[in-house]
Structures are given as structure tokens and as C-alpha cells.
Length: 338
Image (cartoon, rainbow, N blue to C red; front, side):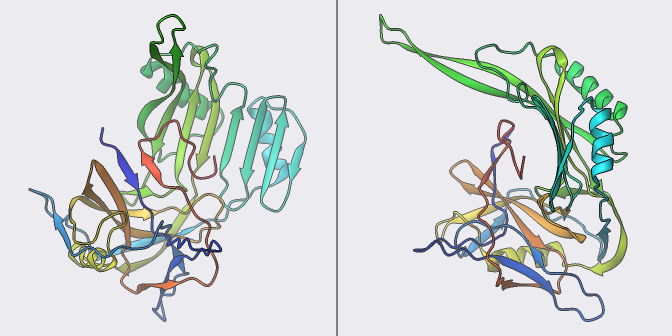
């Protein structure tokens, strides 16, 4: 499995005084108005003169038009969160504010965000594992079966969820022999993650705001569930850029982390729907072109180009938060707001 560096498209300019700006995308169409769109991006843009397709690679065939989907507003109430907590075996009072509802009891916690309906259920004493008392983790097949059963039994399994993979969070412990001074390392398995993906209209969903993970701990017990799975309905069809037009926009925009004049190669191009981070009140699932680009030095970066031609970049007046770079795969890192 290749190591991929995610470079989303929110421009963060760091200067004296910590000035942070963002790049957003606004639809200029009059009769088919879509809201401003922000794609996270890190670092100042670098112009790249030579972006070419990798050997043997051809641009995909994409429809001229594609459906944009309207996101349904989730109904998150204290009563519903209490009922879900009880289903999960968590009894306690609900703490509610403008953004979320939380139920806690001892090491168990359930948090549900109002903007997206994202839920995070966990046993904080077990979800991160214990290096001093390593858990007895099951076989992958057993972990998958346990995850699916837990989701189904508790009404948390989406109809469109597709099993993706199982990853294991690990830790490395270094020990030094006091007699010889030799240092040895030991890799310890801490917790397993059973991960599910989704597609909309046959296209994958990308971005931090669409994920389903079940955490498996000692003896195959479920010790956590992270679910951000916004519901949606058809909105309108929009004419989109062709793959070659999107490639030209990528060349105009440039690739981050690349020295000027370097040649980089596109390894893969595909159309996807973009899911905003779970704290955001997303209005629409909009299409983006995803370019996986080999920039050399063993790094694959992923860049998003908005697929709807009316969407043009502008500097947002509202400062955007700086988001960390993400390495793929990074099973032991918590992404988004986990």
C-alpha cells in the first residue's frame, strides 16, 4: 500500500502575526445558485510548469452533467441522543450546548454533533489500547463480523455502507539493555479499526466528513464507533468540466510541496463528491475531480479541483482554521474532529 499525503485545498498563509486566509469557491450562475464552497488547503501555492500523465495512464470518461445533492438537516435532540445512549448501554444525563449533545458515564461517552449528526461513541479506557497490557485482538474476519453485527444491532449500519478495510493501530516500544547498551524495539497492536466507505450516484465520497469506523479491542469487543454519514436528496443536475479541463485548472493552480520547475506525474484521476468536516453545516454534496499526483521523493499528493465550471476561486474574507496534513493510510491518527 502506497503512502499518500493528503493536501486539501484551503489556502493557509502563515506570516508574522499568524495571518491565516482561505480559498473558497463561489458559483457565479444566476439561475442555478450554489453556496460558497471551501476546500482545505495548506501552505502557499507553488506554480508547476510541467504536470504530465503517468506512463500508460488515460483520463477517465465522465458524463457531461452530474447530479448535485442537497444535504438533509439532521434532527439532533437531547431525547434522541438519550435513547441512542441507552441502546448502547450508556445511562446518564445529557449535556447539551449549541453545537452538540454529550452523554457520559464513567469511561463511556457518546457525542453527537448537531451540524452533521456525526456521532462518536467510545470507551475511553479501551479505545486507545494499553501498551502495558496489550489486548488480545481477533482475526480480521472476526473483527469485521463483530463490527457489522454491532452496527446492525444498534441501528447504526447505513444501507449504502461498503466495507473498505481493517487497519490496526500499533505502538513501538524501545528498550535499552543496561548491560550492553543495545536498543531493541517491540511493536504492540493496540486496537483494530473496521472501516466502511460510501458512494453517491456511483462515485466515491472524499473529504473528512464522510466516514464510518468501528473500533475493536480485547477479545473482539467493540470499544468505539465513529460515524459521520449525512443523508441527502437529489437537487439539480449541473454541467461539469471535462477531465482535460480539470487537468488544465490543476496546472494553472499548481501543486503544493513542489519546487518550481519540477516535473510531476498524475497517477490517477477520478470524480467524487466532497464531504465537509463534520462540524460544518454542509448544504450540498458537490462534485470534485480528485488528482493523485506523484511529486517524487516517495510522496503521492491528492488535490481537489471543483467539477462545476461556474465555481471560481476567491479569497475568503473569513479567516479559516489551519488544518494539519494527513498521511494515508494513517490508522493510528484521529482525523477530522475525532
